[in-house]
Length: 116
Image (cartoon, rainbow, N blue to C red):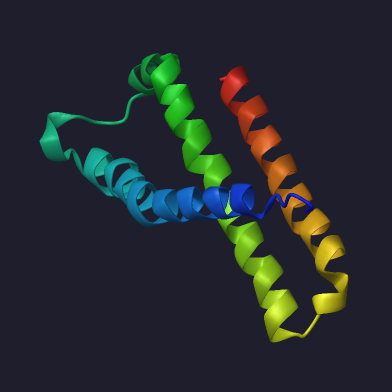
């Protein structure tokens, strides 16, 4: 019996969906609303952000925040094309394009986070 990589892609899909649903809105609220408005007594200053981003856990958070939603989107697009447009015959090609694009996006996210 041939082993499938589907469980791995479903794991990345679920993780990306969780990040997109929970962490992205919180990050937007904190950096896009709370900090610029001075809520909580803090403001976004370049020195403060540079110090925060230089911490390895903050870099890991940024990587997860950027990379995992790529795989969530890739999975959704793949199955939308396969099921919605009846492109079942091109299943492997769709998977290669979608997950390849997500992998490139994750690699670029890793490169960006490492260079911070």
